[in-house]
Image (tube, rainbow, N blue to C red):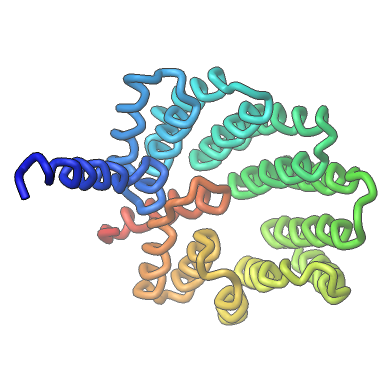
Length: 299
């Protein structure tokens, strides 16, 4: 067989290899943030108004800890958004970016806009989700009053869902009790924290929201940690989602409080390796990285 006859197969192999090149999102998900950023920037050279590439560059920079550099990309993504829904989603992404920087006030400005969009479209479940998202950012940033107000807002928005089924009512009631328990624990009001945990447990025992069971040990562990009951905190937290970077970070903090640096490092490394641009990672990843740097530990 001659060279010309083989050419289509050679070209097919080249195209196949090109198709297998990872996307920017895949590079982010595998922790290759610098490579992802380079790919997103290359796309923006050709398509400067690409919502996806601008948003992706912002995400990569946040995960690299370069928050100030990320914001112009998020702002460009918001400006270039093609639909009100896409704009709301990019505003939420930028708000989470402010969460990485521990900036509740600026996150609030963006989340407020997204909440307004969902209210205008009568999408009350999403309005409630965004309010809770903001509340979590504010709680992790130490703004307890703002967090409390936004958790209540999330609950109230969610309950406006037309013909809301009992399971959805239980979900919003559980979320609010969970949030009140955590806020009370941070404030050192442990009787109130345990009261809210009992309320959350009673809601779960109705059996209508079994998918929320995994979040109860998180609440128990959180309250125990702030109550300096570290053995109880570990017992509970090891029953929570071990994939959640916030749980990983809280376990690390518990081991640190128990003077077990080796185990603390193990879990701080896990949290520091988070690749999600999410509210749990927004607190856990920067905290864990700062702690490892303070201890001169290689990630």
